[in-house]
Image 1 (cartoon, rainbow, N blue to C red):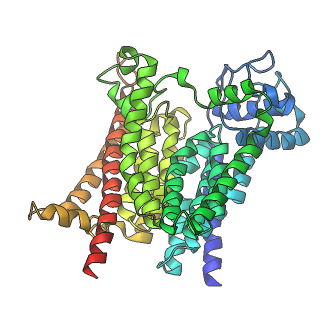
Image 2: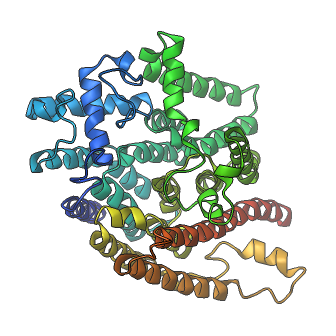
Length: 509
């Protein structure tokens, strides 16, 4: 009884912080002619409500795709339509065709913030609570502490309740989390359905779905494709096909309809990257102008090859050794590979990496806390542009204090607690003196924190040189990219050596 009382308090704290952040500014507030992502979400409600389905993704006189055209999967469009019906009931002016463009008022802001709040309450927060309650070998207090830290993760709160991205991250990440819950509890059909819904809401959820399907494929092979494995494979296949058909049914009427939706979902013409994003291509652009040197199709091929090669080791290990633990870490590794190397990544896509990192927070609290702080810092240029510096600093400090208090992260930096012991043992066969990893990790964290604080202060208080107007933004992205490369190596080491350690233990028994 006490556990549920405390869990309720934790949820209320998370909701209070979310609503407090929502009182601040949002993307594009008072900035015509395009305004920002807030206007994108309002405009999608306008389009889906006033136009027939066949026009949602096409450029017409009533739907100028250059003005926040729909570029997310059908489930997002259906969600916008649902919100539009509520908006129509409250105030039809909010979604009036053409005349509602750039509409801003306190009442409408309250409505838009409430739509995110309700989505969180219905999809994301229940998944977080249930996931934490289902954690094995974790005390009741540990489950509550874990839920508190996940719900206080500042990146998701600042983007959904501050910036107001034109996609509801709490919905797509919530579906993905229900999928992870399905894997953890052996609810395979629930897991596959949830991941399909996540993809149909946000195409970038492919980052999470690839490890899921590798895990299930490995599980089917393990159980035998002539017995239970074959039955499971058929059930999963039927679930995936049925969910996609239902979501895409209105767009299957004509071949051109389907192709147009796909073109909008995967905008190759927009280039290798946009804006300042903390991935390899944007960072490399400082020294080598890839976008100017190489043709577009070569950029696509190079991006695909690097992404595929970087995620391949983890996916192979997961397929050969399917287990919930390897699955969770592979989620992190694959999402990070996509973020660093794939084509046309947005700075907010780091949230797709942050979710699986939240899910291993109780296993490696020191590294997870560090990563989640860096992921929020990597979006600093965007948050500054939206006048969200103060809520960013407050939520980051609250999250850091919660993690330090709940997990004593600085006391959990031994090889065992960093899950690097199998790797260290392997290295010590050749370098007996290799015993300094925990100490190095602590020093790297201190250096990282100093860099983030200095760059935040410089970005917030200093004007960049006239010849280098993007200096601070580029420095933030470059520093964050170096962090993410380090984390990618770290998580892959855990995945690969975990499997090897499992085989060693079997032999010793």
